[in-house]
Structures are given as structure tokens and as C-alpha cells.
Length: 272
Image (cartoon, rainbow, N blue to C red):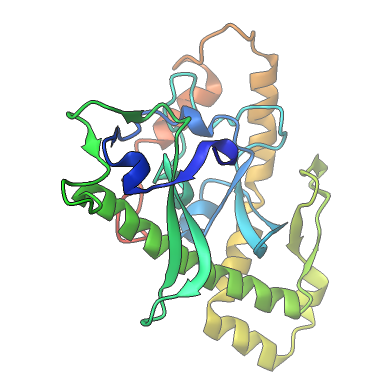
């Protein structure tokens, strides 16, 4: 079994299994952040703080869902409802994930392994659910839709990583330990305002042409959410651990109203 329950989807392992579409965001309750892509940066900036972090793939932008690893995000209710105005693309394909293989197809698309989280509780043997494969051992139409969604996101993620590499090469990243006296998670990176001011005209044009300025501006604007997120988590910490997250609570009521807004379809699909 792979770490976190993720295993490759194969006909040998899943040929006679089925899966259910998730109806609860409980799986994201304890997520401190999630990776984002350039195309969704404006929508993310309207709802969450955006920071940068060093990962195994390089520096990447991430939406902050919680300021403390040991505290649940206020964006998921106790009933598992998503309470923000936008669902980050990384969270929409649960329980499936893409694992890039470091190779490209002849048309330049990135090859990836389709994985499934077998600990998600969404796998079944009930024929009424979605099959993994058809009788010929080919991915079912529903799972091919998931695969296409993830292929689009993998491509967008690679483009975003390339932009971040450009930002790094220009020396634009710097450690960010706090913002407006709010302590940020360890390892947080931000854009250096001093280096930004010293960019040459050629560097500015490169960032403008590549779309990297969109990511920079989204990061800068989104930092206003740190104050709200800190207050929201403080209020949650003060609530009785057994108290329900009711519609009358300040946080839940506010977020429930926000959640009535329609999520924009920035990757060509609303998820799976």
C-alpha cells in the first residue's frame, strides 16, 4: 500500500471494483494548504491567502487553508460542506490524484500515473456505483473524464512551476515569517517587495509576457485574508469541542453566504 492510501489504478487491482463520487469535503478538514495553478489564481486570491513553498518539484504557489497544522480549516463545516466561494482545483478530483512520471507523450503532454486513495471510503463492490474499467479492461467513461481533468491540471501545474522557476531565478522569493503581526507557517515564502522594485524593464516584460505578474499580484492581494483566517481559527479554538458548527455562528453564517456564489470553471470542468 502506498503512503496515504494512494495506489496506481490498474485493471488487475481494480477491474472488478467501483467508486463513488465524493459528497463531503471532510477529507480536506485537516489540510493546511493545497497547490494551485496560474489559471485559478484570481479566484483563489478572492477567498484564500496565497503563499509560496518549496516542494519536491520546486517552488509552487499554495492556497492557505489553515495557519496551524494542528487546527482544522474553517472552510469545511462539521457536516463536511465546503464554505468558501471557490473550490481549489486540487481538491476536486478526490479520491483520485495524478502522479507525473517525468515523461512526455509525442504531442508534448505529460505522462502521469492515475492513483486512487483506497482509504477514502469511496471504493466499493456495488455495481450501482461507477466502475473503474469496462468489460474490455479499458477505463470507464466516468474515469476517463477524471483522467482528462487531471491531464489538464497537470499541464497547468507544470506551467505554474515554470513561472515560479522564473521568479526564483530573478531572486524574487524571500522567507515570510509573519504578515501584519500574524505568524505564518514555517517554510512560507513570499515575493520580495524590494527586489520587485528593482526589476529591470527587460525583467518586467518577461514577467508580463509569461503571466507571472498575475501570480505576483494575486499573492500580494490575497494576503489581506490572513487577518480573517487568524480570527476565524481563534474563534473556532474558543468554541466547545462538542459544539456544532451552526448556521448561527459568525464564521459559518458568513461563509455559508459566501458559498452561494458559483465556482468559476477555470480548468474547463467543474471537477468529477
